[in-house]
Every structure is written in structure tokens, then in C-alpha cells.
Amino acid sequence: MQRIKKGDTVEIIAGKDLGLRGEVISLLKGRERVIVSGVNTMKRHEKARQRGNQQIPAQIVEFDAPIHWSNVMPVCSSCDKPVRVGFALAEGGKQRVCRRCGATLD
Image (cartoon, rainbow, N blue to C red):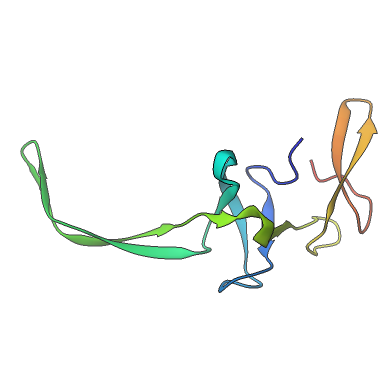
């Protein structure tokens, strides 16, 4: 079971975006990275190109770049603080729990 899942609200604990919060858009498991909305925003310059009959102009595209998952912590919805994740057995199986207040994160 994963400590961070898609859709979780996380807080950045290291790097240039320290202290910012955002929602996890996707996980890149093989590279141990997550993409968080509004965090680690990069710019890429794209050349003008032709796609069929359509001419696409040159532009600057902003996108959210991946960040290593050791630099984020999930935010507990009940205590509203970044927390470490624990696991507990329940009726439905294994669940993620907040180490601070004991609330379930799922």
C-alpha cells in the first residue's frame, strides 16, 4: 500500500516551493516522483509547427514538473497539518491513518 495516492492533498517539505500545498495529479512509481498541481511549475519554449492544415504558433508552455516523493507529506483532513502515514488493519483491510490524530486518510 502506498503512503501517497492520486488525489491526496500534500505539502512540500523541501525545495524551492517549501510550504506550498496542492493536490497530487499523478504518480510516477518507477521514478519515485509525484506531480502536484501548482507546484514546481516550469516553462518550455515550443517552436512553430504545422499539423495537417493547421499552423500552431510558437509559444511558451507552463507545466507542473515532477517532484521526488520524499519532498512531500500528506495533509490530514482532520488536523490540517502535514503528517506521517501509518497503517492499521480494519474490517475492509489495511488503511492509511494519521500518526498525529489517528484519523483515517482514505
